[in-house]
Amino acid sequence: MQTVRKRQGKDLHLKSAPGVSKESVPQKKKQRFHFDLWLCLTVQNWILDFGRPIVMIVLPLEWFPLNKPSAGDYFHMAYNVITPFLMLKLIERSPRVLSRTAVYLCIITFVMGASIHLVGDSINHRLILSGYQLHLSVRENPIIKDLKPASLIDSFELLYYYDEHLGHLMWYIPFFIILFIYFTGCFSSGEEQKKVPLAGWLLLGPSALYYWYLVTEGQITELFLLTFVAMVAMVIFQHHKGLGPDSNGLFLFYSFGVTVFLVALWAAYLWNDPVLRNKYPGLIYVPEPWSYYTLHIKKSH
Image 1 (cartoon, rainbow, N blue to C red):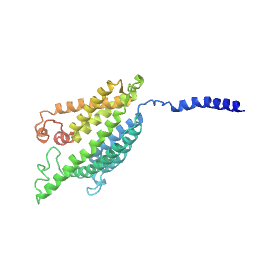
Image 2 (cartoon, rainbow, N blue to C red):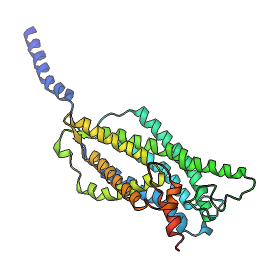
Image 3 (cartoon, helix red, strand yellow):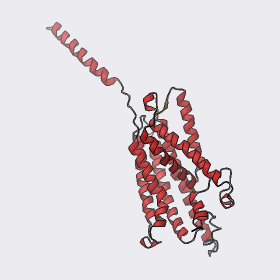
Image 4 (tube, rainbow, N blue to C red):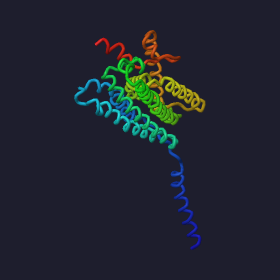
């Protein structure tokens, strides 16, 4: 009886061993191109961010009185909710475990900065309807420079600071940190994963063009270039380890590369514009598209 029990125990051990070994072997997850998320991000960026000031100009003013939220404000509110949600979904699909604390802090700061910008930008576009000229500084604007008491001008400069500086920094710094954190997880040794599919190439142009608008209108050229340089350094570092960007990493890297070219082309085109040169002094000269609009396009109509 004892010998029979010993044999049965050995048989059970031999049968269970393969099953245990299969469960203990880590299976490498094949990374696919996130076409659905990249498409949603691109479409909502174009509609809710780029289209926001356009819809405020196109729709009749009677539909949205100056003392009520405009259509563009509702677009901005939707952007402030949808964008962080899509960024979180992007992080969830990363093939490697990323720091949740860093991601959560970035998302919270992103929402706060975008919300500050929502208020400042809403008032700013109402000022445009009243004659405010974006290519001039706050104190040089005809509708503001003669305000009484003069301390009101300081209040408008504070509003401009919240809109164009603090709001942009709290909005865009976490935005690019999240993209870079995601990019650090987009490396693979499999050659089949290092190719951008046709759907990615079709999205590349609209994506890069939006980032051009984001960089120029947001006045974040230095931040964007720093992010791109960090991505290049990460590619070089991973290359020495025998790894390369997968399809999602290549899509993001190529989008940023095309954006750098578009920003350089935009700056070269307006290099000798004296009015814009006066508003955008400094080493890096990148005028805002809407300043160009109020200066050269709006005046001609």
